[in-house]
Image 1: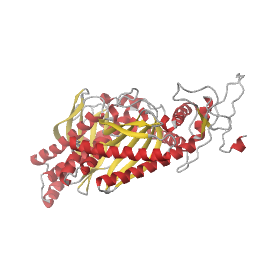
Image 2: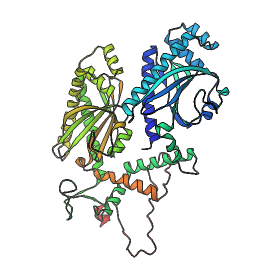
Image 3: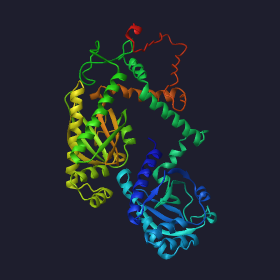
Image 4: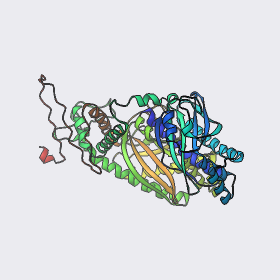
Length: 510
């Protein structure tokens, strides 16, 4: 994944934490809308700003050095600061209208800016590979049109990376908050330079989106392409049915005739149904344990590598390691957000509502809550075991071994650090308890244990095809891919062509 994409995910996580901590500070709901990310020069930044702005300087400390700022309209700064010091509504409206940014309001908004920088710092500590802290410095009021670009005031003329998000305070629409960080120290300038020459950013984004759509459809629909790739490795018979060699792992594979044949597409559907049934049973049993109603909605199942899982995993998680027994081998891993684990554990030990909300907000997984959440994961493992032992030929069993906090963005994708670097089948579900959204649960099961390791061939083939052939753009809502054009052989090649017939009808294949 590109550095910019990783950084966008990190800033998304910052936005979520900023919302929560500012809301807790001012005592009113503070919401930041969907952010927009972009790189801009000093000139572009202030050309887009409004009338009077409040600029709070930010110093970067730690392994990354530099300076940035926090930029909001002066009316918004007064509104936020006035809410913090609980000005009467009529008085606050008058102050906002007159833009009287008094010393008291400066101090109160400064506290909010401190909280914003603190929330961002905590998120960087959890998810960014390098140690970096955001320290709020002095603030000033400025008129963007009067800023001299060539000057070092109020900020230096260097490339910046900007997160812009609309704000809402206690249901009242405000302007946008801009978190402005120097691009070069975070390695984001080089990323922009790698864009293809002659292709506008909008066109590049459209091409990336089209490629992503096609790749997603390949994984979900085009099981035939799996067999085509596998055929190149001698794993498919002329009828197009994937053969699974005998023996365990690559070392035990025989060169002779395949003992067992598997249609990956049909087998995948059976596995998906098992995972859906497992989540339903899990929800029932955890509900009985907690005395409430847990709902788990299966979002999707897909084959992933360790790297691709980490790219989409999200912020800090509690990872539960599970030993897979029976017909499987190795470990499976259950990931949930820290706050979700704290909430479920707190519900089990019946924490008072106020105390529970406080521990969730602080992500405080103390010993009691940790032990309680451990009981919840035992129930989850038992539910999956019951379904797979009843309905799956290999009779897999899941046994909880350990739990630990994990920051996915800090995990080395190319090693066995934290969890094994191998192909997995990922099952994604969304949890709700008594109507409260608890985010995603993510279950990783070794693809080999589910006999789905061939699905990972699609990713490699898709990447190679993207380099060698133009990608056909799929129409919106379409589930059909444009036919894949064969790669032309060199004119002087004396090799006969390879012909593969793929069908799910045995008689037709013969």
